[in-house]
Amino acid sequence: MKSVFDSVSSATGLDLAAIIQGQAVGRGIGESLANAQTANTPAPAATAPETPRTRAAAKDAGVQDAGDEAAAAGE
Image (cartoon, rainbow, N blue to C red; front, side, top):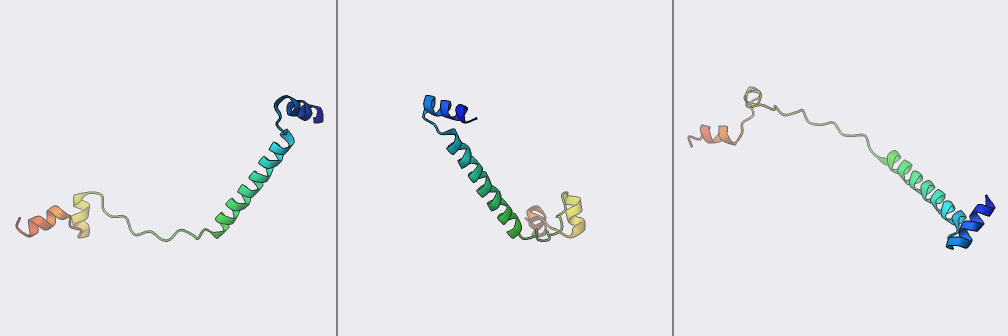
């Protein structure tokens, strides 16, 4: 493998060993940060009950929309 790295280095001026080493370090840092964030993430809070999706269901639930309020006001 060393001969391949040396030939690439002489042809391109790039040090493949340093590039690969940097990628390995970057991946390690990224994984560590991801694990730290996952460990510190709180559990999701309970969500509010779902609101009715139709006007009939909304009226059954006692929810008024702007049209119902205007009609009740006599507009």
